[in-house]
Length: 263
Length: 263
Image (cartoon, rainbow over all chains, first blue to last red; front, side):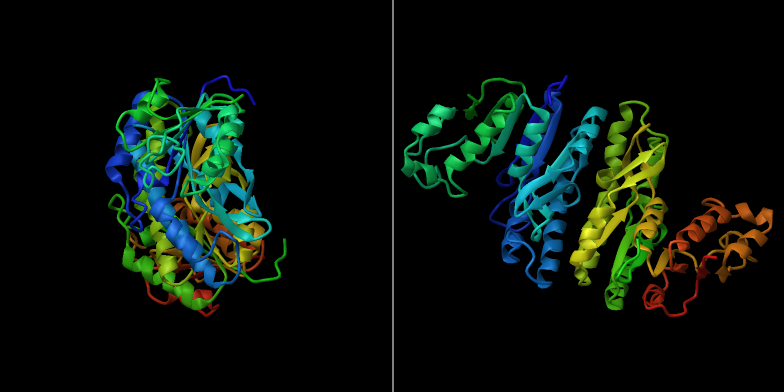
């Protein structure tokens, strides 16, 4: 659906706003700064944040990803929802302190999965808050699954659904590295950052480099981003730990990062 | 809709779990005990909690009750949503620590108002969590209003909608007094507690006593409760500050309080 206004979609990666190595550890100074960069841009945004160390450890421990198996998981699911809400509360607090009114829209309440795929997101509620001038904030969370009882709804699944609905002018992924690399820059000293990616770049990526990333293949990630850009605008992957980059990306300025553009 | 299982609907009043006199002051020991009374009962419940000192002050200050007037209210609305989420996080944490898995279902995400009246509540999401064995927890919150932009969705509005849907065996209101009195017990030393209320009792209440309560007329409150009991079961108003009363009410035992029974 075409919009009369222009919208930005911002993902605050769990690796940026939390210390992924330590359970429930917030990077509050980083979060405070990112909220101020959003505020100072004056742009209309929707924010999606990852769960980072507030979600992944317990979700894995209780095997929530594959759905309901036994009642012993229920307290685990509740614990994960509690933990990600603590993180989400920090995010909406940081936004409010930066002067940005926001509302938390948890997937456990507004999304449904079917065998792990996002099958429904109540987009009308997002739209209503956007129209009011209140920034919707959603996040990686436990959600109901029609087939499995419950499952994990990731920030990236939410990003794709929101991109399709709102045709954002720019889709910004804040991560803890400068962009998308052809191999893991934390392991390979010779890792090369991809500056611009389109369908052609992707097709030319050698097969050996298609599975080089620690958190899933680059190929799959770039495929998702390319699909998102097909709904309009471009996607950029930037380093949220570097001051000013989110602000620059929101203003449409050139910024260090990987730019993904549709066909 | 008739249920094959039996359900209890519990309201934790804002005056019980918070100190209404001091902004954002939790009564954490009371909350911990009430969560354990819910846990030990072994009953299937839905929990609704008030906002107390986490919601009322700011909501009044920003005049949210009458809906959207100007953009200056937006940060106020965001602040109220943030504050009640902090309280809600304390409630779901207390339940989890007592061994009760719960999920937060905020009205800002799952309810809609129309001129201040609750016009939609996504009851299917409540039902799905109940069926999974996860306790839905909802609360007084800001919610979208079809006519006014936004408004305040109260715990009591949620109680009525949930009572209608789930036909609970018992509807328990935890307040900070022993029951419903014929005048304000904090002001009138001769205030008499009503033990049993039905339609006849209500009709016999003298007109002068119908507006005796500080937070709204007794008459209106009892009317609402009578309407709720028409969906099945009985309603009881008990003192949540007195240990054991919620547990007793959940077990169906006789307990100090006001019992409201339908025709």
